[in-house]
Length: 122
Image 1 (cartoon, helix red, strand yellow):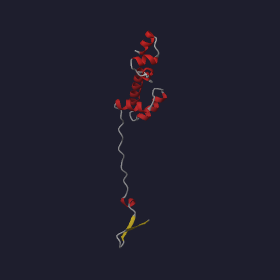
Image 2: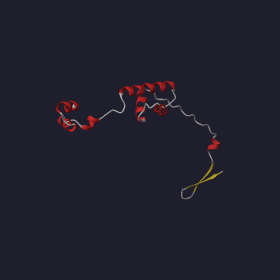
Image 3: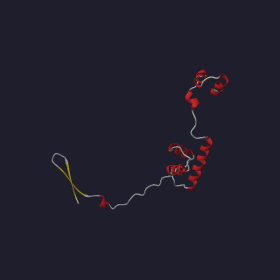
Image 4: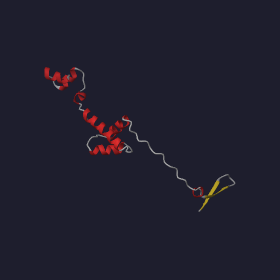
């Protein structure tokens, strides 16, 4: 609309934006990534996730960065979650320690004024 006013009525950008009550910053805005490149990014992300199912979004982000397909980690994470590619975390195994090794020999004595006195022998 602003471009039409500028060409047909030979107005400046400021004049044509003021006439239709339109912000000049909105007029000058350019997208950083086109929809075609974004679609290419999403397809490649999904292909890498299928090839490497145990990789999280950060490793995949690094691989996509080598191919010059990404802008930032937040975009990678947003698409990663939207595609449902969350990697399940493994539960850690509890270490079995002998009870004697965990507990040190501790002597506890209660004084007359009910304060505790502890000493550890090693």
